[in-house]
Amino acid sequence: MSVAIRAVCFDLDNTLWDSDVVIGRAELRLRDWLERHYPLLPQAYSVAEMRAERLRLIQAEPQAAHDLSYVRRECLARHAAAVGYGRDVAEQAFEVFLTARNELELFADVRSALARLGQRYTLASLTNGNADLVRIGIGDWFAVSLTAADVGAAKPHAHAFERTLQALALDAPEVVYVGDDPHLDIAGARAAGLRTAWMNRKSADWPEELSPADYVVTGCHELVSVLNAV
Ligand SMILES: [Mg+2]
Image 1 (cartoon, rainbow, N blue to C red):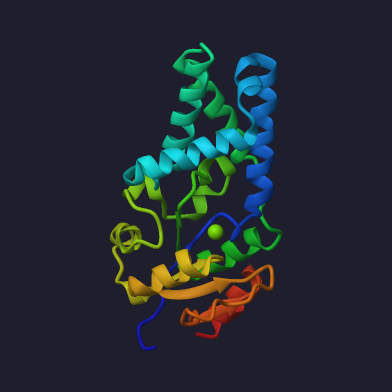
Image 2: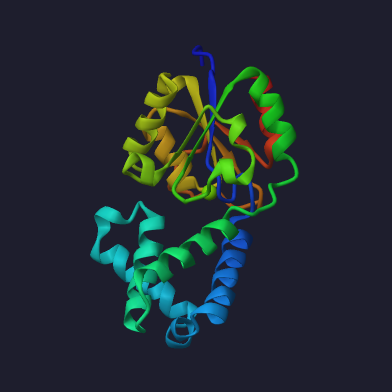
């Protein structure tokens, strides 16, 4: 391709850290906090029931499905109200979750790769989740950090990528989007015209129905090597 890459935009969950570990730990921390401070809520609702309520809310309000913080906060408020607690309990509980959600260990290859990529490219992030790079401690690396809630649309919707391109003031072919999810990240970014790099850390099989990514890497060091060779 003739257009030079100017920016590298990252997915976050399961691309820069193991999201399953992080979310699982945050939900345990929330549960523990509720049991100690507001026990009526966890006595009335199991983890599975709380998850089911979030799914019901997403189905009932699909226009809000991209804002996972809203979904989680609103469901906590409903559970709190149902057992006689105020909305402030839900706000405190959500903050416990969010704090734990942003206490995480990056994959071991991330910091050194960001340092190297940052010398050559503008770095950005676009996530469907509610991770906060400033809280995590790597916010300074990224010129642009957007969430689905920020842009009003979740990946794979083209609007999420278009808003990121606007924030970067770059054209789509100048940006390579790096993510672990073939549908949300790679197919979504490609449809919006970006270049794509599939971060396949877990040796997953590529879905047959999708066109392959421009680049396939197993980690951030390989990403650096591949982009150096472009
Ligand atoms: Mg991901």
